[in-house]
Amino acid sequence: MSKKLFGGAVLWLLLWWPAAAHADPNSSPFGRTDPGAAGVEYEGTLICFRRDVDPSHEDLARCKQEGHAPLLRRADGHIHKLTGSTNSITAKLASDELHGKKVKVKGIYYPKANQVLVEKLIPLEH
Image 1 (cartoon, rainbow, N blue to C red):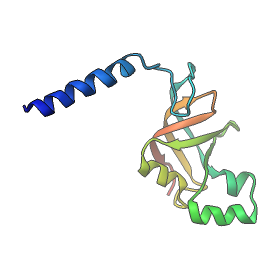
Image 2 (cartoon, rainbow, N blue to C red; image 1 turned 90 degrees about the horizontal axis):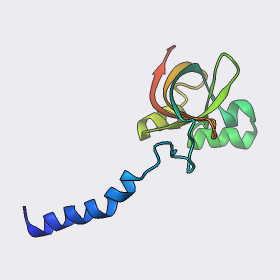
Image 3 (cartoon, helix red, strand yellow; image 1 turned 30 degrees about the vertical axis):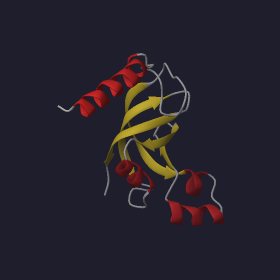
């Protein structure tokens, strides 16, 4: 291993290890600590905030251009905002393909934000 490569690896370790070692395990990707965060598996209908909750002509055009603002409406009436953990999941959540369809989401629920970070998205109807 060259000195330059070894030095870079040591520098990276010294700079980033303390931050990783002291990271809050309850921190969320939404910018605040949420000790109630938990792994969940929910079933429900994939809906769009702009199209289904508060529709307007401008919002419908925005959905066509940018994709849907995904929400999950569960059978018990709860509605959760959904965020994809990867680009492909985010694209599926925003697509017309699954809009209005029953799905199962697996991920991490952050109660303070009422948001699910979706790690797996499974269509239940085709």
